[in-house]
Image 1: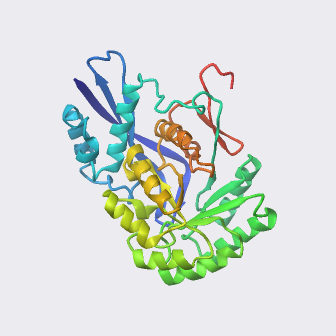
Image 2: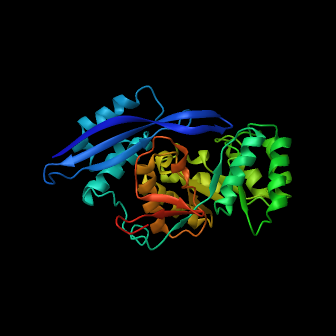
Image 3: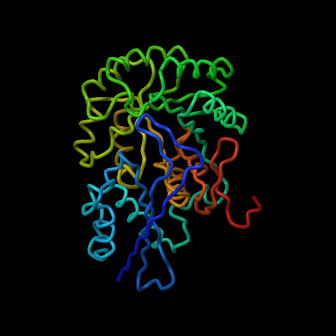
Length: 345
């Protein structure tokens, strides 16, 4: 017999996290803990990370649903994907907790060379929106600490100012020295996006995430077909759960990349389904966190390591909180490193 409980935890940002959707100073995570009568003393943990205004789980009924999961864990454990189809963050938390329990409750979800401290994961440095001066400072900090791939949030400031900032970076760092990704979070209209893409191409930008709001499949398809800068779909994936619908979206839009956030795409298995579909259309991908604590980030990193994707991943967000949990992962010179206990690191 399983038993499950949950508890909330509010993560506080070191600095306000600015996006085109607004500014975050804190965010909520909920931790599900699962035990089993046949495994006394062993506990599996999973994280339900909620992004305000973006996560389907961002609902007044979230805690009610979490309690329902705990009350009915023995009923849903075998088929939680079906029972929690419309609650991707909770679904991920249950999957994560059950896998941890199955593996002995040692926070080793996916054993690999990464968890043996023999392999590191290349990551991008995230630059939050802020004033131009703040963003310059953050860029300087990231490049001086060894990052050669930066992800910049754009779309909240005047684009001429953002372009000026991006131009100043490119003047200092050639494309073969620094990869620049930008994330618009759907900030532009289809008409605006065409102009933005043309200007970004002059700076040899690696890719742009979600230039227009999700749900505009025809408009996004036109952009992806004609874009001078590769387009990565992010928010576009949220809420599409049926494999047939996923296939239709990829066939219609045919982006250059998709981005997997397990907390938004329904967990590991669900994200792997997206990857399999994308690869049939020669669409590349990478993994990004949804601002999980170090507990969720650790699990996502372990999973990502098993996928052997050489692109820089978006897994450097553990540093943004003042009250993050301890975990054996750290960022060093543009890589996410797993510090095996007693490894001497």
